[in-house]
Length: 109
Length: 117
Image 1 (cartoon, rainbow over the protein chains, first blue to last red):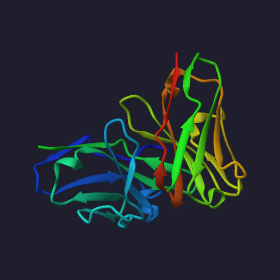
Image 2: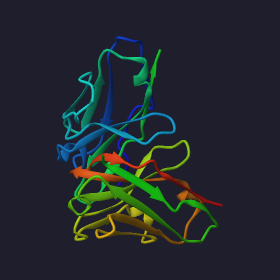
Image 3: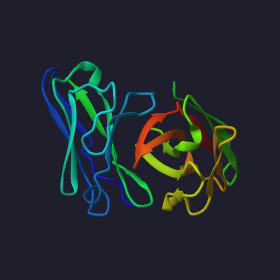
Image 4: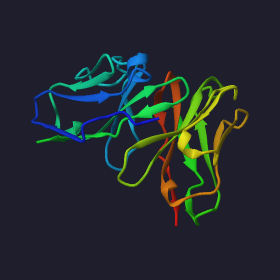
């Protein structure tokens, strides 16, 4: 069970859009439409931002969106705001586990 | 309001054991799978184990090699993680999280720190 691959860091200025990728295999990301994304601020528990590739839980801003193509899922944050600065993790359901990505640190310049 | 509260963390020597608990409230506990996820200091999230609402399905990360045991008491709305033969690399904050779908962890506790040293 290898972790999913995410870029270590991304950055953007307020108002801009950024995209974080999450690459797996046909046994996880590519095999199921069950990719989730989590936001984690320092010292806090993770928060669910996207589930089932592109669905937003109630209360999550429409600025957050998700997509998938083949074995790679993506999280896009539009209209960056200072409070978006955090770590972001993707995850994928498999038949017997949950795989997480290594995490991406988003810096809002 | 959905709440998950972990407890039982602390300092333990290598080779020792520890039992973590997760107290749930605000939802029908027996209707949901619950997972343990850990995060080593400065590192990313690592899924540890999941248990279905009815105790019918239990899964573990391969890396645990049989050292950890997940269980639940639906009458007490509680989840447990028995950790044996602890190693330094098990040092982490351990979170319990409710699963609302396939791998969808929609509510998380605040975590409990386990230090193996």
